[in-house]
Image 1 (tube, rainbow over the protein chains, first blue to last red):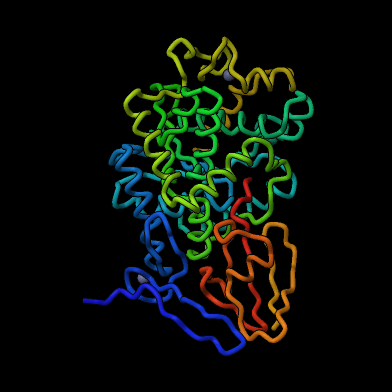
Image 2 (image 1 turned 180 degrees about the vertical axis):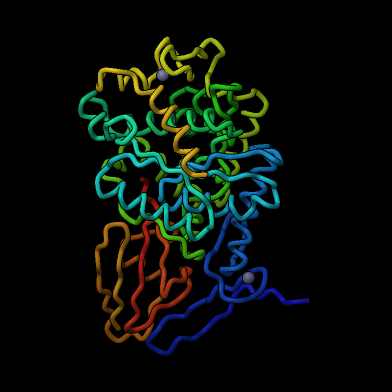
Length: 345
Length: 70
Ligand SMILES: [Zn+2]
Ligand SMILES: [Zn+2]
């Protein structure tokens, strides 16, 4: 039996410092990560095994995807979505899943061009065929243009467009679910914020899975629900996966969200695992009550233009594009997605 | 000792000087840079370092800020 060495003390010269070189809890070789909540240190190989295992366990434990199902993976080119695509591709044979990556070129100048370049490189590296949709080519406008002409914040427009396109693609292509790269550090602050603001319904929508409605609302799944943002980054680095290293030009890291995030960071530092326990209890609650993406059945209606889910007779995407471009772009996007799929065969 | 640090995503480059030292722990380096241990990933030669590892004179490391939403 191999002896597990947790640490080794090394005197690094009279003028240096005393170092406790962390050893892998599984094999004793040099650790590249310490995971306090799991009380483990792991080497490169065992961390990859741990990360991918955690993704597979999340998929099974929360019933995100069943054997034989297909999953559309949203790939932006950022570290999280790149880690998601890589891990899902790795566990797909074991879980019998069909992985279908989709990248949306949002027209955010150099940032979007770099995102596309990285996505193509990652896809090549992982041996997957990624579908690509250019917003500007399909609707004739970029996110900054849609934002400026509608006087809505770019992040709100971007979120709306991405949600719409991902759902439309899943419906158009008959895919069973849409997977996004949201990890615990994306989700936990929003869950806590919603609870603090008294919106339990919104908090429960941050569960690992939100159900869909056959034919027009795809199930959304979050395979990175139990991994941290730092783990995603380390996984991408160890696997040698390219990812976009610049910030989105519209990103805003401040306000209440940043404060809550800071609080959770400090809390988890002093009480490792509390963030995970919080999100697991949220997931249990969501399972107990059942979480649909629409909070009530009454909210589920179909857009008169594109036929996809809407809270009123026109969906958010068709309303935005109608206002900015003169005609609703939903039907155009659905048509374009058919072409994207066909041209990739 | 002198260690060169490149920080992502800002691409800022910093030189850390520790006269009289041969090595310095990653934890010390991060304190110097104003980061918490779990706010970043420190990489040397393409491999992540833990906070307990040391960097030596002439080393070049990359520091990736974890929170770089995009
Ligand atoms: Zn190991
Ligand atoms: Zn519509």
